[in-house]
Length: 165
Image (cartoon, rainbow, N blue to C red; front, side):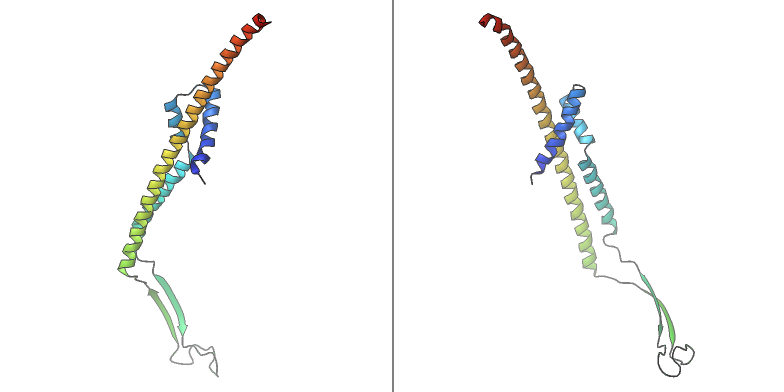
C-alpha cells in the first residue's frame, strides 16, 4: 500500500478546511502539518520508548525467590507428618539466571538498532507529512486560481451573450 496516498487525503482535508476558514500561507500549512500530525507524535513516542529499552537491554534478569518442602512423606504410616522423619526439609532460596554475556550484548545491539530504525521511520514520517501537506496546499492554491480565472472568463462570456443575439 502506498502510504503517501494515505496522508494526502487528511492533509488535503486539513488544508481545504483551513482554506475555507481563512487564507493560509504555504509555510503555515507546513508548520501545522508538522505540529498536528498524530503519526509524527506516535513515531516520536516509539523512538523515546526504544531509547528507554536500550538502558535495560543487557541487564541481568530479576532473581527468583523459591521455596518448598523436600522429602515430605506422602505414603505409609507417617504420611503428611512433617516431624515423622529426619529427612524432611523446608527449602528457601533465591535463583539468579546469568545469561551469556554475548547474548546480553546482542540484546543491547538489537535495542540500539531498533532505536535507529524507529528514528529513521520518524524522519520518513515527517518528510511524508510535509510532502503531502505541501502538495495539497499547492493543488488547492492552483485550483482556486483556476476557479477564479474560470469565473472571470464566465463573466466576460456573459457580457458577450447580448451582443451575439
